[in-house]
Image (cartoon, rainbow, N blue to C red; front, side):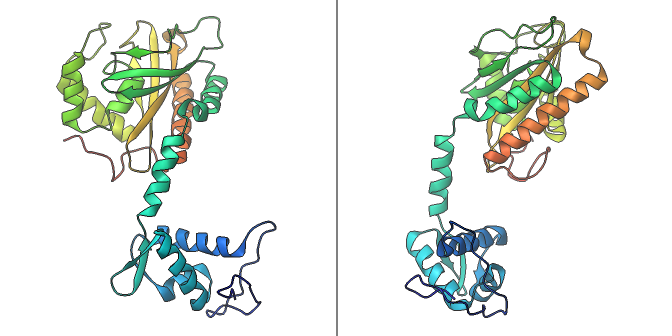
Length: 287
């Protein structure tokens, strides 16, 4: 058991389980405090002291002292009925983390992986205001490849896979505002220029977890994109792969889809997103 002064003894926990062995180089009290925070995070609500003690495999006295310290710092809050819940201080850490994230740096290895697995041109983009801003690009490895243009802004949110993958997770009123502000330019005969038709397609994007641009922005180019989202379901950015139609067989498009969606899932997980490819409870619905 851990005494209030931070020292420990070898007595078993009150629930009968032995204290968890410390990894070399770790601090037992920190390990235990983090174990409690993880248990509270998994609980989804207020938890009684006895239940926390059992979940963390700590005796009640040690658990109580650690919780008192975490309450003092704001990482744990006392809930009604002598229960405990996560405190608001955790939000501060989460927000600080997101501010410090360098999306292009974090995404670079995933962009390279998509490029290696598909051989195609890859983009990382964000929705900044009403415009799609390309932050990172990797040219295709084939002799015949897509001309990806320059890093910078674009008004093709309605016509590109990156744009559609990000628009799909916005509320419908915000989507319509962006479409009205930027107008739905017809870049090719395949470009969707009707707002209602695009809204309907964005419902499919949410359901499938990815967007596809079949020569809607550039003639002869097919692109697949997927959104990167954070712990609240908000869009952080999008990653996409583009191929000329001469290579766009169903097998190759499936390879592109899998590579792009795997990258989007992994990057979303780094931002705390939960769940799989499709819509989540935290997403704002398209009505």
